[in-house]
Amino acid sequence: MSNITRGFISIFGSKVVNLFLGFLIAPVLVRLLGSSQYGNYAFLFSVLGITMTLANAGIFDGIRKYMAEDRVESNWIEHVFGFYLRIAFVLAVSAALAYFAFSWLGLSDRFFGDNFDIYFYLLGILVVSRQANSVARGGLMGLGFEDRSEPLSILKKVLFGVIGLSLVYIGYGLVGVLIGEIISTLVVSVLAYVILFQHLDFRSVISRIPDEFPKKELLSFNSLSIVLILLTASLYHVDILFLRVLTGDQATGYYKAALVVAEFLWFVPNALQMVLLHSSSELWANDRTDRITTLASRTTRYNLSLVLLFAIGLAALVQDFVPLYFGSGFDAAVLPLLLLLPGVLGFALARPIFAIGQGKGQLRVLILATGTASLINLCLNALLIPTYGTRGAAVATSIGYGSMLILHVLAARRVGFDPIDDLRLTRIAIVALLAAGVIFGLSSAIDSSIASLIVVPPIGFVVYATLTLRLSVISPKETELITQRLPDPIREYTESMIRFVA
Image (cartoon, rainbow, N blue to C red):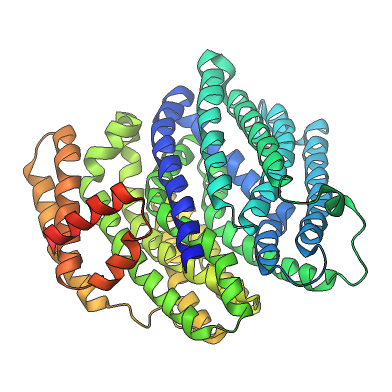
């Protein structure tokens, strides 16, 4: 449990800092690019996201899962890393060459517009740099070094903010964004490999893989993982790709802005998903099914309680926040954002459940669940976007996201654990309703957008936290388990606050 908690705190801390940095970078990037270029930016990175899913081929998850198992075979960890490193290099270079050919033949400009040839050349380089970073980060996390891998992700964000935004500001536009991404990713990748090879035997990594090494087992996991990850990636990118083709770059820019804000809700679930795959793999390997159910149900309850607070606050403040954050021209993003929130909440809850099931390695049932959600999402987007544009995309995506929760709860029970065993849903619902009344009432009573954004969040948080503790959504014993892992000054302050409100 201590390893899981330590890993979560490292990843969560990184997510919080990256969220803050992204919060600062996004509105500047939007204003520098404009809504049309921001729509092209969203489209290019959706294309990149699908490509990286295929090029990575589940390698990031495979590295974390199998390195964490640390089997008795000689140099097991080095052989796992070396095996995946070779595959990653071949796949990334192949994808980059495909991008180069696409641009060299003039197809990028023909299909998407002027300047897309240079964009795709740069995307090819970015695929290779991202693959290198993914392998190194996965290796560090597989060794349990989240406290070293995650600060590097913060450095990457800072470097992009400095380099990328500077290049956009002086007139390089999307080219500047892509160059900033490439440079920041390469710098962080080099640093990650330096740290990694202080703990791995380099000769064993590059030496020939032994004949007895279970290549088929690892490849089987990856072949199923790539299907699973591709289906999941389609949930993130289908709406953007459809919108860009069917409605143009400006509408895509507005919708992307709504997604950026809605996905702020995912920073805690993302951290949980990241740490639970390799941590739960150890529990599955030791047949600790009872421990897994306890871990999953407690995680789901904490996750629901926290993300629901964020969703309520965002819904109450959206009219004040979006125009101030992106500019008055982005009022068109408000309604899609509200329509996205229910689905984003459902997907947030599904993420850790998904990761724990993935840790067992029985991926077929997870593929069935995710594939069903992906098909729902695809069909609804194809049906609704031509008529309703960004609103149709938001409704379709929200339903697709939300179905992930229902389907993955069912899948989890089939895999062998129950993620809603101790959900305390009635108590959470009472807390949410009472807190929502205060938060929405306070927001409506304050006329100034800036004042509302300053006053409502802290008061809303105190009300919600007090109700959560009073109604035992989180018990006193559980708060002790959480706070004892924090650094002493933070722990003492947190414990005093908990005693005050409880």
